[in-house]
Amino acid sequence: MSIAGRDFRELRLEDLNRSFGMLNALKGVSLSVKRGEFIALLGPSGCGKSTALNCLAGLLTLSGGSIWLDQTRIDRLKPEERGFGMVFQNYALFPHMTVRRNIGFGLTMQRRPKEEIARKVEEALAIVRLSQQGDKLPGQLSGGQQQRVAIARAIVIEPPLVLMDEPLSNLDAKLRLEMRSEIRRIHDLIGSATIYVTHDQEEALSLADRIVVMRDGTVRQVGTPAELYGRPAHADVAEFMGYRN
Ligand code: ADP
Ligand code: MG
Image: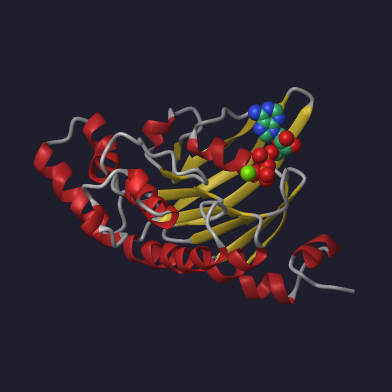
């Protein structure tokens, strides 16, 4: 797999708004992500994390604002035209297809040559350390292994950006820890930027280069783990990072 995928310098979210009827789920979210960065979107349930991620992926339209990949405006492109890799909480694998076919599905849809698909699938399998499991069906794998397949499927297209929405929340505590370090290892290996949604402070602190703390449809603070932990800008950020007073 070529390192770095399709290149960009900066992804910019500018003043994103999204409402559902009367409810404003995003109220002017702005953010810049640099090439190769690992960003955690952190905040309590209902604060708008998944909405922001789905707008970025193109699965939801914006009510206002714009999304830029360098000089190209991308918020009106279809999900497949944006070409981001996506990993969800429920792995969403095809149960009747082998691991290899699950991983290669997107490339097959793009009508890439068979040999190229086979080569890329093997590379992705190796990256997630599942080379021995390629002929199995998803149902024959553990939850952690299924999530590895979902990650392989997201990275096989060599995306400039990988979007993950609470990818570990269905795993037990031990596997969650193991997969946490796997996700960072894979991120460092492939060089794509990652935006990782979580409500778990510890996960964000241990994984991310920068953390975006969200609350009630807004960005409350952006900083490195050290900055957020050492200098929370708001009482609610401090409380959420685990301070007690
Ligand atoms: P999070 O991922 O941080 O838990 P969400 O982005 O899922 O939060 O939701 C943000 C807010 O938008 C919540 O109040 C939620 O109920 C609402 N919401 C999300 N999706 C929909 C939808 N499809 N229809 C109506 N309301 C929604
Ligand atoms: Mg969510």
